[in-house]
Image (cartoon, rainbow, N blue to C red; front, side):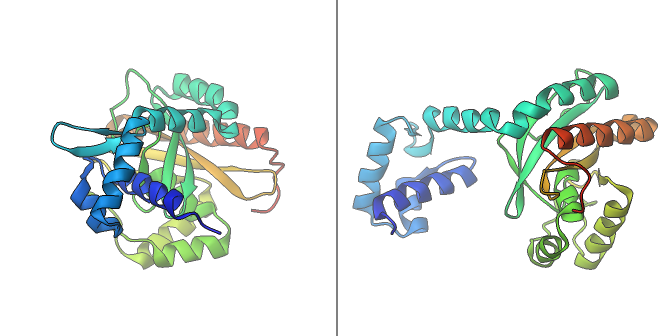
Length: 252
């Protein structure tokens, strides 16, 4: 049994999570189909409780309580705790920024980012969501998920172009991810950020299925110069994290 008021709160949170610039009362009312008077009361309550903030322009954004809750959920995740020291070690060995992400439906969610002072800056940050088809981490999921899940995702996800290098043809993406599955890692070659090259590898759990992915990203010239060593380090790190999750090498 659903509770209508609770559903509305969650709808507001979900909508504002997807809107970087926030949204007005009228926009929220129209987009979510909630009467203006009811929406006004709901936003007022959420603002007073610090789950939302209202700017001087009467735009509503997520408040600090949700930021705190999100960070607690992220850092409290078991795989985050098990991975963070391995990620830091990998940064030291590669000299590039390293990420950890999980999949949520047709997107990845970044759980961790460990920066290298020498590496190129990327747009990705912990808590951020990005598509599957144009990121090394996302393409790892498209490559190493169980075959029925993989095929369903390849058939259904939107192939929005983010750069001129983004793969937008389903057959090409299916072929590329099959190659990645065979070689044990995936590549993002300026497909999400121009100038950034990324190598990613899957993390498996105790049941043998994929539970997360890690990646190493940096400027393309630097990454190409040391690509083989980066591949070795990122796949080794993914293997170590998989062991912490109880993976023993069973069939994925």
